[in-house]
Length: 308
Length: 247
Image 1 (tube, rainbow over the protein chains, first blue to last red):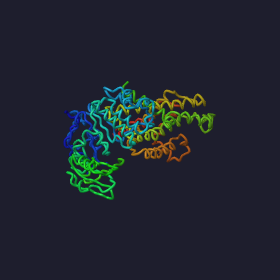
Image 2 (cartoon, rainbow over the protein chains, first blue to last red):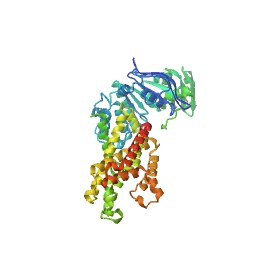
Image 3 (cartoon, chains in turn purple, blue):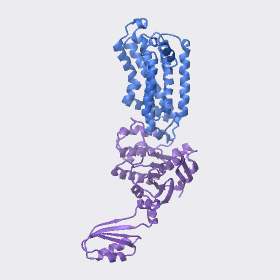
Image 4 (cartoon, rainbow over the protein chains, first blue to last red):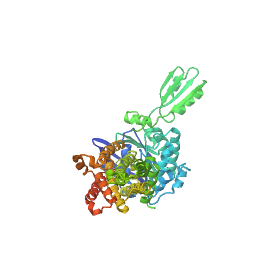
């Protein structure tokens, strides 16, 4: 598959701080590619170097084969950008804002169709600043799509949104990808990356510490899964310990936690439980997540919070 | 429509929708003329050599309003747009910075000039202020003043770090200039040293140019204020162009 973005050895300093430290990677055409990492990891700086909004110190960046610092106009024509600190001048209506931005491009989309595609029907005459957070974010997505881009950058798209709006925005992002546009996004919500991204790059201290599909990233750290349940009576601790893949069984007054690894471990635990003649209640299964991948790779928790 | 004409149209709409914008950029000047007309009238006064209050002061108030709008209202607006990241969003498009700035200047210039014209119309038509010169000359001088002070406003916008600082600095700069302009306080009542010093203020020069043309003097008799204002326009434009920031 051809690549929408190709970065080689990109470095960006702010004073003595290496915000982006010798980063190389590709974003394939047609995928949703996510960068995750804590605030200050360098995600936005790297994204803005690729957008051509910041000047990299060293390295090469190609967007559809073009250098965003040299072929500025051509890259801007073919890419869409949603900035992390997105804003518009006050007292602008949704429709006229889209109409204005459409005039900046050679082959603009029909902004009325774009509004209805993004669920903003009937909002053309509303002031942008009067919309809800989720609606406003859709306006910024519409602005990023106004030129029918082949590649769209979405920086911390759902930060500050309530969970319901976040889910709705995820659908919008999948819809963009399904329409043939490559999506390059940053997030510090692990859940967002797990649900949305075809491939994920984990960024820490300006470096990409891992890059793969979510499933492969999780498999790569060989982390334990957990099955937790409650039984009325004596749990079959010894039989569970013999199941292949089980590493540890904890039993605290009827609440049992089985730790283990491997693909068949959960299934085998289930079959032991269905053999015994006891009531099993409140069963939960916990899989390792990207959070565990981050912890394993960096030795630190990635706290979810608001960006600074 | 091209991007620039659309920008002009949307910037105009934005200015008209913003209550503060409407007030300061359009309505303030004519309302001020009405207030002055109602309070002082335009009966002949000995201290104005037999002219009325508005005859003597209408154009100086126009100059003061030009300075307030250009040095406070506009920098605060531009710095606010920069602070909120609104200018940055434009930067992420193929739009040329020059096209954006040109449209912004055109809109603010036209609104300021209309506002001054409305002020002069109110003063003359409602309160009978007596224009002895040519209105076209007065408006041309006002246009030169607006351009020079707009450029100062853009230069200030480029320098000011935050909207709050822009507000404060604008006030600190404008009010001494107003005091020294000869508008609200006649220069004749000030001590000699202050009066001489006041001649260095570009606002004083604009007031004197407008008053001279209003009372029928010719352009060539007033080359000093013209040179001062053109120089201010050149210097401030150079500073603004050099230091303008999208973010």
